Length: 258
Image (cartoon, rainbow, N blue to C red; front, side, top):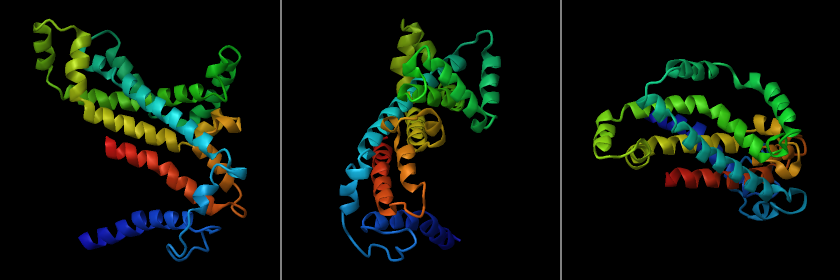
């Protein structure tokens, strides 16, 4: 069974990655015509990115990094508010937790029309938060990730002994000092997980970004590269593969660092 699992892992995980890398190194390659891995080796596709009709690629990369980084940091900071649900007892605590859980039960697809109309209305008052705005897209991502991440962090905070809080209070520490100097260092593993998952999901998201962003200069990487592959008959698959390989680098570096 171990050998079977290993073979299936190679077939379904490793070979597709090698195939994309092979296509990216083969000038003018097609997905169906590249039957041999690494039959050609050239950086021509990578050099073509950012020039000619692919000139917007690096601006899309920058937009994606801005949105994903801000979303990851904001998600970690907002999710850390689960400390209040874990440590304090206040009116509406259970109802709020239940509400966050119920909201996550509805498919995200149901909110697209409402999000579009909401941002369209906000655009008339605060253009920086409306449609075609990276800040508006970040706010949408932060709102969507609040519920699940709050529950994830809530369970992790519950695993930390309350005696640490009590010992800090005896020593004269305030709630803020206890949170930032004692609790936060202990929950760094789950903060890394939340930040990484948030970064990956926002970097690879297409549907929400397509709804919010309308100007090509504001596109994220997923939306911009979709235009290249929208017509499968004329899609530059070798350029698309090269762009995909570069897009994977930030995720790999962040994963290794965390």
